[in-house]
Image (tube, rainbow, N blue to C red):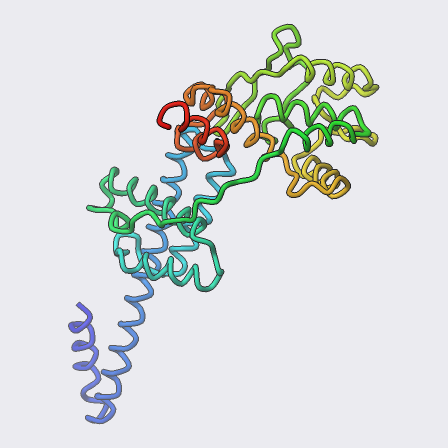
Length: 327
C-alpha cells in the first residue's frame, strides 16, 4: 500500500521535478510513511496493553484481591511494559529475562523481590493464555528464583515479659497482649471495633487479606487487659484502639509500629515490630504440637507453605525428637 502511494505521487510530480529531486522526494515519502506506521503500531500496542491490563486487574478484583494487591500488580506489570515498549502479544521469554536482569542490576534488588516480580508476571501471562489472548505464556520457561532460607527472629519469653512490665499505657499493654495471643496481622487489628470483641467466648472476627473473615481467639490475660483499657477510655470512638491524644482517632498501622520501635529501643530488644508477634505465636504453636492445618486456619493462610515459613521449630525440640524416635 505504501509503495503504491509513493509511486502515484512520483508519477504526478514527474513534469515538475528533475531526477535528483524525484529521488529525494521518494526518500522523504518512504521515511515519512515508515515513521507513520511505526507510530500507529506503537499507539495500537499501547491501547491493547492498557486494555488487557485493565481486564486482568478486574478479574483479580472479582477473585477478591485487595486494592493494595491490585495496585501492586498494576504497578509491577506497567513497569515491565514501559521498559520493553512492545505489544503484549509480541513479548517473549528473552524479553522478560532481560527485564528482570536489568531491574535487579538497576535497583540492586534481592532475589526475593525479583521472584515476586516473576510470580506476578507469571500470573498475568497465564491469565492471558487462559483467556486465549496469547498462545503460550513466555514466563513458563523462567523458573522460580532460588532464595536463601533465613530463620526469622521471634520474641523470647523474657522479651515478652519485659515489654509487658515496661508498658506505661494500658492501651499499649492491651495491644501487645492481643497481638501475642491471637497472632492476628496488625492491619487486621487496627480495623477492629469495640463491638467486635466477644469477651464471653474470648474471640473476635477479623477481616484478613482479600476481605476474608476468620475467628481468632485470645487468652484470659488478654481479656483482663483489654477490659481495663476499654474501661479507662472516656471517648466515644467505636474503634478498639485509638490514639492517646484527643480527638482520640482510630490508631493506624504506622502509629503502632512507631510505638513498638520506641519501646524496643528503650529496652534494648532488637527488631521490635507487630509481625514478630505473629511469627512468635506460630513457632510456639508448632513447638507445642499444634497441627499445622489448624495453625493455618488460625493465621488465615491460603497455602500451607506460607504457614510453614512462619513456623520456625526450635533446634532443641528437633534434638529431643531425634532421641525419642531415632536415637
